[in-house]
Amino acid sequence: MESLLNITGAVLLVCGATFLFLGGLGLVRMPDLFNRIQAGAKTTTLGTLLVLIGAAFLQPEWSLKLLLIGLFLLFTNPLSSQVLARAAHRIGIEKSDKTHVDKLAEDLGDKR
Image 1: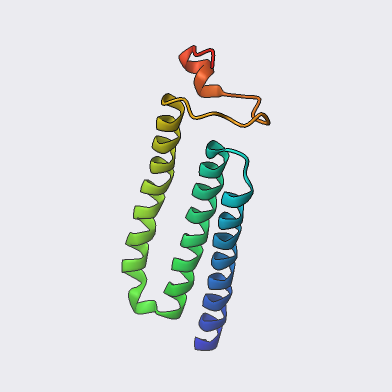
Image 2: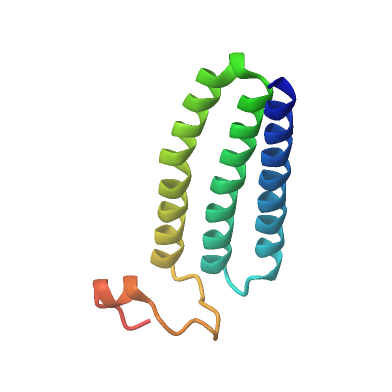
């Protein structure tokens, strides 16, 4: 039974590390700040949660603490990325030429 927990924990850690790596790659490859924020927020949330779940499988006595960290991450990471994107939009950071839709500008009535 313990070897099954170790294997599951190791697989989750590798999956989480893979998502975190892809998030870093997305930060390099995306064309503008808004796309980078999107790529970074999604992948770091999922990657970190997978790492925390994997660590909980490997160290079951830490499960409660890891659960609380995961809940905090679920509440703060998407919110902080949304606030950063709104602030960047408000100060007029240029969008990429590939960006065709700007829902925030439509909602606010901006013509940028």
